[in-house]
Image 1 (cartoon, rainbow, N blue to C red):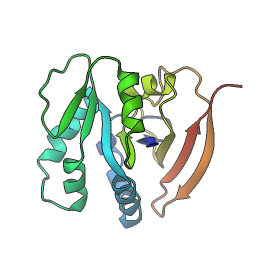
Image 2: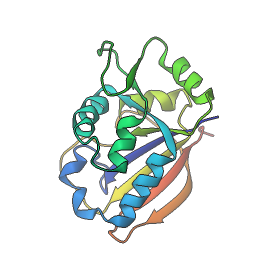
Image 3: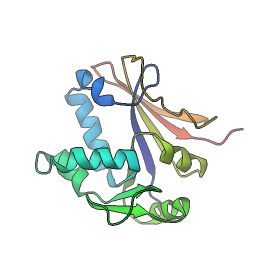
Length: 182
């Protein structure tokens, strides 16, 4: 069965909003290899409306720029939204009807991981239905005063630490598996 991997950049104080304002100072070859390996271990993306709209605008204009951009542009995307209408652009499919049932079917198909960037309403819904297999937090060594925080509206969500990775830039990757409360 395919795994759903949630990958999110977050500050030390839990802000995940607008990573372009605080993450670029910490990028290096080592961190880019991590991102590359994660993307190429996936053969589909799942996202909510906000991520979809931002990514479609940013990434579609980078077609042909490099292997990473070509991979992200070429992957099929599954978008959960109550407001978007079909047809979608950017090799994307709207998840219509029962989101949990549709995602369960996607997970049962053969293939690689299904990757979700960001952490918002879709993540919370997937987590409530037990559909997330791993949460990967890239924690950046910076605190920012404003912005949306990770897991703001999720309630209690216990997780088991699977792995940690440290990068020379001070970024730390924390890999967790959601668990059921005891």
